[in-house]
Length: 136
Length: 136
Length: 136
Image (cartoon, rainbow over all chains, first blue to last red):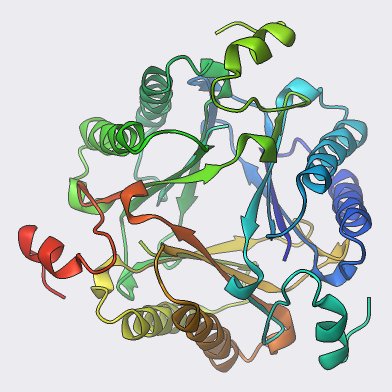
């Protein structure tokens, strides 16, 4: 966790832009969550052909970014995360903000197994990383 | 928000049916939620090849429609939404109801940024639309 | 419900492995939830091309398995489900656990229509199955 899924029109984002967006989402997430190890941040791009995407019942070219994140982040952190990713997307792709949606869904730590272990509750990260021989 | 993802067998739904389903989901969602602007309703079709979809451990041709909607809708509204979309899908595609799953997941308004702004809480829509120069 | 989505690198899992994983996820889910009819367990594989998947901002070959399940399962059941699926994935694919993430998201029964009917609340399954002429 987290997993960010970026649903975009086919061929609307270049390989370079995808790599940069992935780095930016990772950087923003790690900075705002005080030390999530970068390797835990997953970013998936899903390219959708014309005819398979609609907004308001009409063909759509919007970017939909939905992150599943570990529950327990404050409203302030989440707002910064959402706005930071929206701005980064705009900056990297040149797409206007009116065509960008960013959302997050909370997933309780106990409902995630990564690397063979149930994730730690907020505040238990240091002990968990140490126990499993990981570093930030 | 909302985002409805329709996961279907490859080539099982025609282009005309997709467009009609997108319009129907948009119409149903907007009618039941008292004025969500249509442009905020996003519908994505995901076509899955044979060999990549299973039900009960066997190859599956079911339609799975999962919507992420803004939290705060009443149980009554959500039931009408689910049943209305299931019926619309059946009507447009001819697929029997036993092969249709429709679900919604609540996402709090504060966990979504669309068009550069955090979405309004239920009851705050008019002020929000007006503040951002939008109309229903 | 449930719907398990397995997001994997393109061509990293064979057809035989996919079928076996689907059977294993179905078996594990049904055993741990005391009798979910197997036909209600849906497994989707999503194959993602190189260049569309990142972890820590770098190209990734991790397997991300996210299940949407009916809310109401105990923490103990969910832990067994997560660890059981992670182990089954490792066993079938040979992929090390460090490259496997398994998560579940709760969806309230009343937020799902399957086969034309709203799903039963936990504890109401027998009456619901009987009412709709279904068997376990």
